[in-house]
Image (cartoon, rainbow, N blue to C red):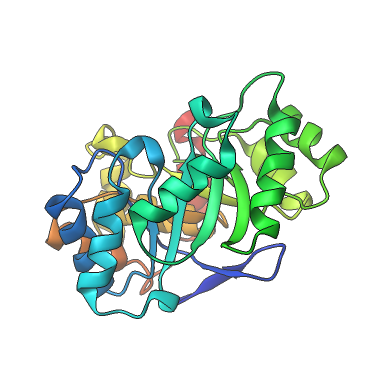
Length: 259
């Protein structure tokens, strides 16, 4: 496993294992800089959303980086208020990004009673050829089951909150059984648990930062990991997680943090 490693999705597209999350990074120069710095550090995956309000900055950062568009995996997401006009929402996001196509388009949150209807519209977006994969975010086992019962194209991804301090193992297992990749958002717990004494003890053993331990744990859990930062040094630090492995014993210990 290296910074260039990718996971094969259920439609045979390959998604980079490490991505940059850009939630709460202001649009324009702050986002463009973070994206360009991440690409400079070796990232090839950026995760945004309509509701983040920074799709333009993501596109600008990719263009400023000099990295060919086809080398960068870009995800954006449908917001629930756009569920009645999904094609227009997709077109708007694509125009703001200005990158020709979207690699992964996700349903950001499930809407009770409309989960399967929305998915059928997502399938039409996929058939249009301007996104390489479709998936969901924050969907439960029951919601995924409803989609799978009627889906012609199964979700490639379910993006959910995953860290040692909170994860749903049953959901992870269900997705694995059905060929749905898990993307881990908030793997760094928004910084809230980086001072946890148990985490810091493990980090010291490996001579790594607490953030690096959290990212490596999520990678070893088999997820695609989306740490967020707009600090150039931390972006680089977060990418330096491929030169060590957490032991099975320490993985078990980290797994129990949520308890």
